[in-house]
Length: 291
Ligand SMILES: CCC/C=C/C(=O)SCCNC(=O)CCNC(=O)[C@H](O)C(C)(C)COP(=O)([O-])OP(=O)([O-])OC[C@H]1O[C@@H](n2cnc3c(N)ncnc32)[C@H](O)[C@@H]1OP(=O)([O-])[O-]
Ligand SMILES: NC(=O)C1=CN([C@@H]2O[C@H](COP(=O)(O)OP(=O)(O)OC[C@H]3O[C@@H](n4cnc5c(N)ncnc54)[C@H](OP(=O)(O)O)[C@@H]3O)[C@@H](O)[C@H]2O)C=CC1
Image (tube, rainbow, N blue to C red):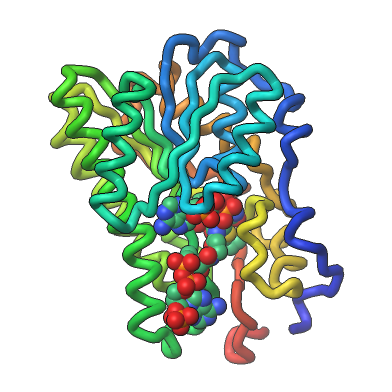
């Protein structure tokens, strides 16, 4: 892979750690989310964790959700030590019953939510022609069906409580330059289309729905990618660098909070322009494309 370099790093080194997330400067006022409750799926992962830290620091009560209780507890402990209000809940977003139980618990223990960030998701790199039925179904179930279960449960809770809400779905860049993850592009394009349909259908319920399409953002999720592919990520966009989870977190605060009050059905790329120029190969680039 001529265009990819060596320089492998350990997955644990990817992204901002809790100490950095506790101290990172923010453009938002310290009380911008005071009185709000935010549920973050994938909240112990890279992007979700940064969003949880930011919104918690801005005064929100935060509920972190994911499958791995130990990971969730690690994130909760770090944030609680900083004086933030954090609760955790185990959920598999692919299972409607698990999602229903999550929302029942959040209603009972936190009085419901005002904002949902769907950051739970992921995929593995593989040439599409080699996808197994199980692999395809896993990625579609996680990213499209799982996100839908979370959105519908949130909307039902808001409708029943007569409460306004906003949803931010973390997707991927679907329109240009991301290769080797066709299953996730199909799933996320589905989430974008769904979000646009629901932005209209649920506007009468005072529910806003937007998506963020991150480009290459350093997180532990990168562990499934070949180190040689990862080494090439900084050259995959016109800004010639990787993005940080904080940059996505601040976009979540904009779209999901009061600043984005008149924005719905939108897709915000936080991708250094990779939706326009550049290529991200998560698998080895075929010789056919080498010029
Ligand atoms: C910068 C680039 C752009 C984007 C970056 C990011 O999003 S990074 C941040 C995002 N974060 C992430 O992406 C997090 C990392 N990703 C993951 O954890 C998983 O890819 C997941 C999201 C599918 C969850 O899976 P899970 O724990 O629910 O399930 P499981 O692990 O048990 O797999 C189920 C089935 O899927 C198949 N299959 C799975 N892997 C491979 C493979 N390498 N090869 C081939 N096939 C594979 C296989 O069929 C397997 O069943 P089997 O044959 O074993 O019986
Ligand atoms: N990092 C990047 O470069 C990019 C990331 N994205 C997307 O952003 C989102 C967040 O990614 P990132 O933070 O990097 O990745 P991480 O892998 O760090 O975080 C993803 C989190 O999702 C949770 N999760 C996965 N499957 C499920 C499930 N079925 N039910 C509940 N939780 C689940 C995992 O938690 P647990 O293990 O506890 O289940 C994990 O902590 C993902 O959708 C990702 O694809 C998009 C473009 C680029």
